[in-house]
Image (cartoon, rainbow, N blue to C red; front, side, top):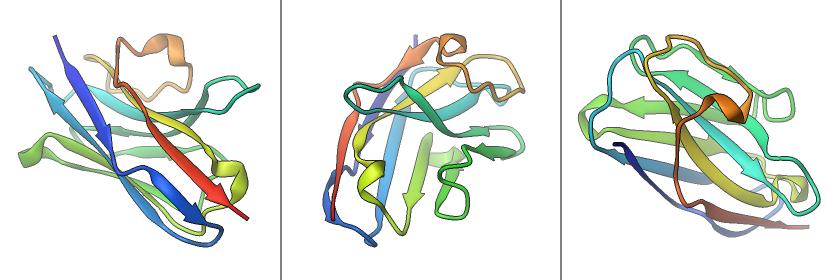
Length: 125
């Protein structure tokens, strides 16, 4: 069993930055992929960024490339999402998720077995 707890969300203005954290408990393995998704009302849950624990390979959605950065701290079992130059369209609930024993980063939410409870990010214009 893997538990995920997100934190770091809040209300900011356009152009500001936020850093989200996802603390994991329970066993994790180097072959796991961690990802951030977001969900805004009226939209599908959207892949944002993903990372492999083992070698820190990353991928990003086109909508956040150059503005967001995903990283992990193996010692703390924590994944981060640094969000810069935030826009109102980034407003959503952000979730972290784990895909066990994969070494691949999938963008489809159905591939992820464990999810956190989400943290709200609101960007005002």
